[in-house]
Length: 300
Image 1: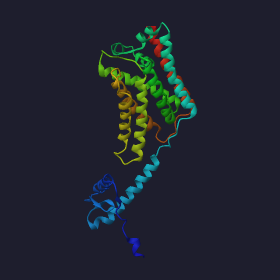
Image 2: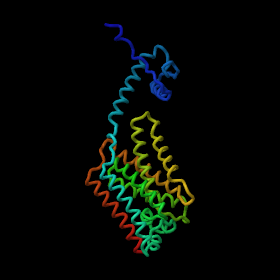
Image 3: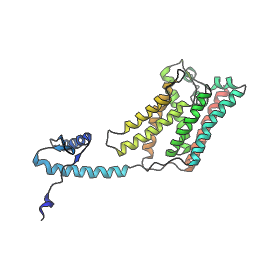
Image 4: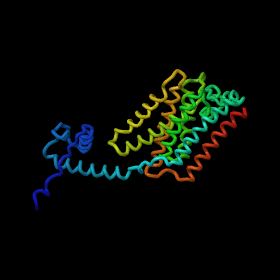
């Protein structure tokens, strides 16, 4: 037999200290006294000479098992939004601008704002539809233009991941529950309007989806928080300027969206986005929620 056949697997070397620490933990769990030491190539494992062969076999088996697990859990490749999805996303957000301009040109503006604004005291008394209707109201032209532009951008981006129907539904869900969380945070003396809670909810959804992907593909304990940090950075950059801006609403929208994104990512895991029938159903449900909320508001 060739003497090279009996050589134990060499202990791996890495340039990343965290990875070497992980290997040491694997060996410690198997009863070895392993330490991490620097070397010319980066970091290596040090342990008793008589344990080298067994430790090399354990690490080799662990690395193979981990690679197989990563392949089995690898999510489907991300796709981009289609031209149709982008067009629909901006058409829907432009409807916010049209609604604002239509109200301002009519004599019904005060009626709609009184009936639909998110007033925490009235929400607490059971007028939950305000959590939805307030997403369609805006305080000025710059307010609505910002939400139209950035809302279309983020809705198109989410639609590339989930489809346009579920993108719109995600906007409504994150905006609604973000408004609720904001009301609970402020208490009874709080009033807010605007789609930005849902817009930043979409940022949160993207962060949650990206966090799950990074968790699956990167070293455990690394990567996932980078996605949430990026989402918070977007909130800080786009949603924190000016005295009239409700920063907490943006933050709660993003946090709710992050949770929703994680739940969606786990549910879909290795599955493709829902098909056309499901997308159409989600769009219809979204429309019914908005129409139903406004019907309840104007019936009061």
